Length: 322
Ligand SMILES: NC(=O)c1ccc[n+]([C@@H]2O[C@H](COP(=O)([O-])OP(=O)(O)OC[C@H]3O[C@@H](n4cnc5c(N)ncnc54)[C@H](OP(=O)(O)O)[C@@H]3O)[C@@H](O)[C@H]2O)c1
Image (cartoon, rainbow, N blue to C red; front, side, top):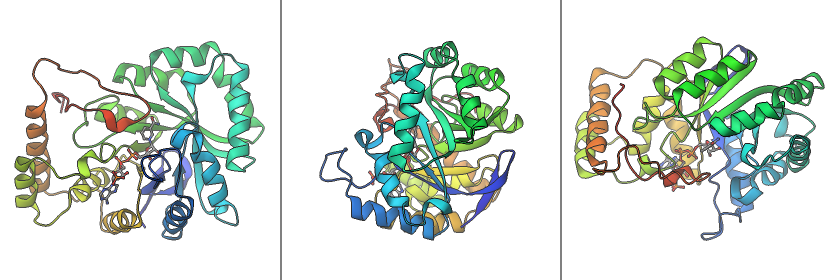
């Protein structure tokens, strides 16, 4: 496993992290985790050096945190850092902060959480959190030793990203959507640079666009990628593009099978910061152009974004700032 600096913390994170949002499930029932299989998968990841696990109140219809609690019992909890998130859109009054947090600690069977994030911040939810004095509440939790470090995950535009960072001087991490198609979407590469400059660690979500980039690509894309590096899988292209970037701390993947985990472990082990050749950069650039051309005319920047399932972003957005 490769390890990387985590912002200003004196701790190194595995370059591959595990997102407990796309675990194997029974049939199409997103709420029914195949527990034995998923438990083996996560434990195998940890045994292979993964030391960062991400979950949230809502994942797997509110079953992810409880499942993780079970999985980490018996010695695994001590081997990893866990991140979970306050479901910002569900908070209706200041008392809800304690209500959600206490329930999360119970589900996870822990007495302190390493990283606590505000989930999916966008303008109105950030405004609400400020109105409810979330940061004062969170500072008290840190002083009590039940929260280790604070962060936020983000689903809005760069100006708000910058504002959130500037509004509080003690963020440890920002979690952003980042993949080679969406490099200028949401926080974007400029947001990543801004956050890193302020000492935040960058945690990447949706590195394969929720799995879309691992599927059979359009034929033009296939030719470009295959010509550049014959035999490299679409998933590997997605991860390698990210691990080439030194300002990313950890790339989370919601792996749903041992095969995917094994492949991603091989990829991370052979990745290296700044190792992308001009041929690889050109292939990604050409690929992006193909996807941009596929964006349906007449609906630029339409966001078919049905939170929380990020894989429902259904159009390729134009990317003009990179
Ligand atoms: N805070 C937020 O707002 C937010 C939003 C989204 C995600 N997240 C977090 O970020 C984590 C990562 O995002 P993500 O799950 O969307 O990551 P992702 O890597 O973009 O998508 C995961 C999917 O990619 C496919 N995949 C992964 N490795 C593969 C491989 N080697 N070969 C082929 N397919 C592969 C699988 O799809 P199939 O299962 O279809 O095969 C898997 O379910 C989530 O799990 C979650 O913890 C947070």
